[in-house]
Image 1 (cartoon, helix red, strand yellow):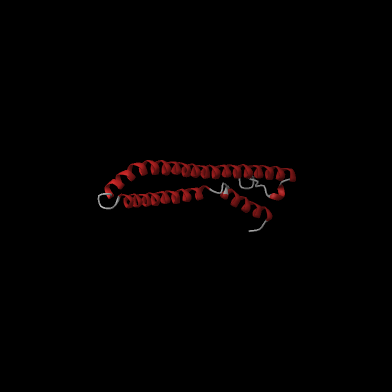
Image 2 (image 1 turned 120 degrees about the vertical axis):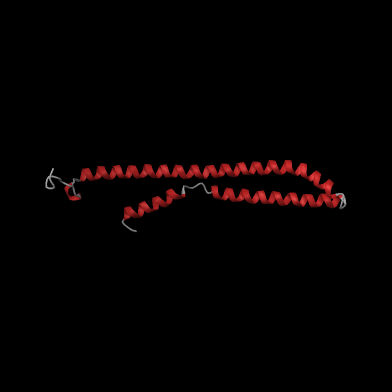
Length: 136
């Protein structure tokens, strides 16, 4: 083939039905891509929510078991130096501080998982609308 035999179609060479078919196919592809992106975003958010729930369970279980075992041991150990009531008060305050730290970690993970909105998809759709309107 020579350069003269190759014909590149330009928008003016195409008929309206062809252009409409292309536009329909492109819009369909765009919508499918956006739906796939939304599903991906929601999967990530759900995983973070699951991680936060798991951290919550670990924090609760370990706090309870650790509190029971260590509280008794710490109270007994401190009771050699201080009155038993003061030993129990110190150990209780320390356990509350540990629980507060776990609660802060849970809050941090939950904040990553919420809101359950596909943010990347929404941003892309806004860009797509701007492109369709012909604005930047």
